[in-house]
Amino acid sequence: MSAIRLSERQKEILRLVKDKGPITGDEIGAHFNLTRATLRPDLAILTMTGLLDARPRVGYFDPGPKARSFVAEQLETIPVKRVKALPIVVQQGQSVYEAVVTLFLEDLSTLFIVDQEGSLEGVLTSKDLLKAAIGKGDLQTMPVEMVMTRFPQVIWVDEDAPVTEALEKIHQSQVSCLPVLKGGRIPTGRFDLGIVLKLLEEMAQGHFEEGGIW
Image 1 (spheres, one colour):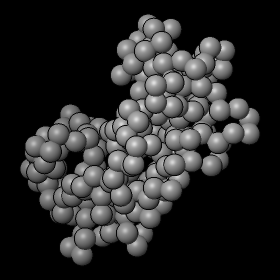
Image 2 (cartoon, rainbow, N blue to C red):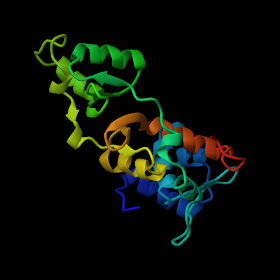
Image 3 (cartoon, rainbow, N blue to C red):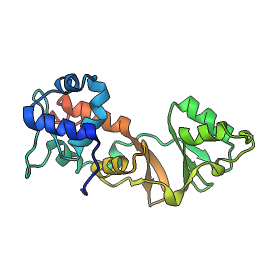
Image 4 (cartoon, rainbow, N blue to C red):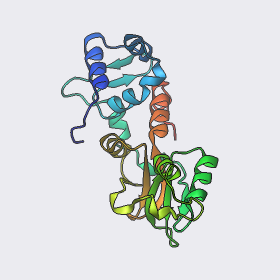
């Protein structure tokens, strides 16, 4: 994997684990005066990219300069298509108002815009819809194409790519959700931080080592 940009908190977590590891998630949270849940995205990124290692009933520890993270090693063998969530799509030409209703009903932050053949045309986020809502346009007549991020600029992951690749794309681009595509254009799922946290949580509980979680 290529080098990733770390936040100051992630760098401090690495220093803490190197000095005091093995250390539990609760102990790391106490150091920052934060809950373990708040730190989960940081711990997920550091663990799945191999900068930290984690073992059930042991905690987080420094894998060393040459060692491979157990979690990162395992996730490189898992294709995204095995853990992806269902994509929520909106047809090109529908109104921004319809997209707002869909986003609210599905309780998501990202919608995928497709054409009549099902090919991805763009991505629409809650931020895009908020900008449209505070503007002067009529949401019931404004097509989603006017506010979406169009396909050439969309960050996506192939369904056959390993989970580690999807994680790195999320971290590098700072997006919260990736379209999972088949054949480079057809959305077959979505990959987001909720999936990342579920994977890390199940591994931390030992389910993966006990025979897999899929």
